[in-house]
Length: 252
Image (cartoon, rainbow, N blue to C red; front, side, top):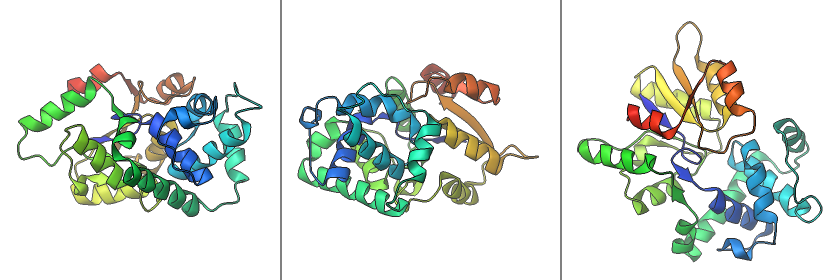
């Protein structure tokens, strides 16, 4: 059974994440990248691979707001970022709440502008969309993501992909992906699950949590996503598959 991450696997959302993250940190409602401080987006995009969740995105953006003028070319390692997370005073639930609230304000203020900052990864998106249209009884893909469910549904609807709320295990409650994977498994009992994610750290956590004598999860790294410089080699060293879009489309 295929289980998809969303951001970095099905949708290129880094522009939306930058605008929403900036709004969450500053309390503003910026709708265009041109309205961000010069250099801020480039710094955020360069360091996007280190984050794994909405609270972490909040922390990264706050760091970018503080450093885009003095360290415009900085590139953070995951180890350095974890030190930043350890020093974060704002609780994780509060960070997630502020981020999702900012996204809601953005969507309400200018839905078209919000949607324009998201782009499906092609040709994967169209292949999945067409396959679901062939399967008239299907409820859409099973998605395990740190994005809030309402945003996932809005993007899927806008870009023509069938999606059911029941099949979207979103990050609204700011719970670990492993916890939501347990709920998914309790519902489907369709092992093994091929889980495609662009965050290597998430795949490692899934592997450690679920794989023992029985291989419950087949971890697959999405090569087209937001990867760190050594992620592909490390994934292969760990024995994980590394897919291009063509590899995944062949399975779909």
